[in-house]
Image (cartoon, rainbow, N blue to C red; front, top):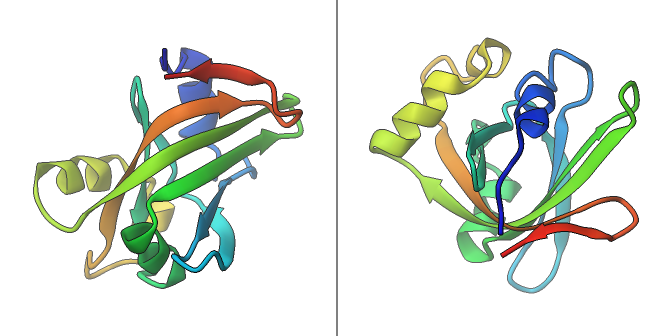
Amino acid sequence: MIKLIDQMRELIDPALANGCPCILATASPDGEPDIGFKGSMMVFDDESLAYWERTRRQHLKNVTANPKVIVLFRDTKTKVNWRFHGIATVHDSGPVRDQVMARTVPAELEKDPERKGSAVVIRIEKVTNLGGQVLQSR
């Protein structure tokens, strides 16, 4: 069962301000990996993470064609780390996009003044630690 805990929300939502933004790993349909920081990552609900995709570059191409992703959270100060394995869905319009945009940290929205970004919601299938131990799964 997936149930993202309060500690995850408390650490992930302000991660950019705390100097430990989440890292998103994606792969193209032919397996070419891509990795990058997502400062807007948030706990969206009890089973999902979300972020504001403002760059509209390789990560967006990858999750559109191959929605399997991993999000890495690591905070060296608290010594907490998680890997969230999930399935991403892109929302270019509608209420989910509006909800994610409304909750996106101002530092990320300021980089998208025309609000051309998309919301990406990641339904979590499994949570592991850095050692690969499964902490939660569907």
